[in-house]
Length: 315
Image (cartoon, rainbow, N blue to C red):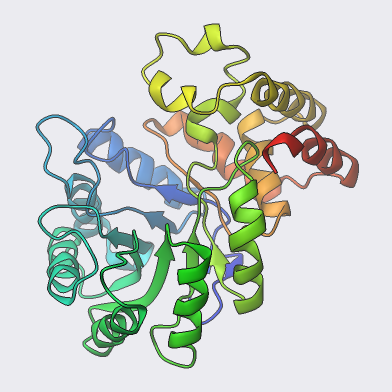
């Protein structure tokens, strides 16, 4: 990939340091908006999109698979060589869980909706403790052997099960190439204590979700009053606290110093902490600019230290 700047170890992929979230496709973005966002993302050098079979089953009237279908329509018109696609399974009925039957059926469904022959990076979206790690590794090895997926990645596994997965899969095609944890300035502790050591030990790529804390780290909200009545109020409430708003204040100060948006600084902080490419999504083209700017922003040691300190309550 000519615009790729970060290599995913164990793969043939170089990725732009922003992983575009596809959760908005077929939800807050209609087809025209989805195509416009993807076109602009690629034009700006982006090449890596993250979706899941369960996007957007939470919307009334949707059944899941909407995001993959919209992405598949774009791929059909623009070509599969323009993007690296990651998708996930594990949460969508009736193919939830990690059994062999459910996982194979989920992959077949994703392949059909995306209109591709093989999924570049396939995540086990959630663990299923009813299925042993040995069996989960065997299922992934078979999916890779059959050419249905190219590489495996993991999300939402406990540190113990992650460690076991790496141990049981080492040296096999199913050895995970990436992790997708919950990580941002106001959600640090679990990742930094439990997941980051494993990511570093095994040299895997890290693509965190909720990189902007459901929008809190865009800098738009500086108090609980700002959040009330907003469409994302339910998601934002989980982060809203005096300590979190102190982080937002510092984020805005650093952004002003650099002449960029707080969004860009929040993503740059993740990259400075070893993240390969944070996941963030947009509904409109004009929102992309601040995400893509992460490629050109480097925080000074002093700015990084300030952000680390103000976010210590979350570490």
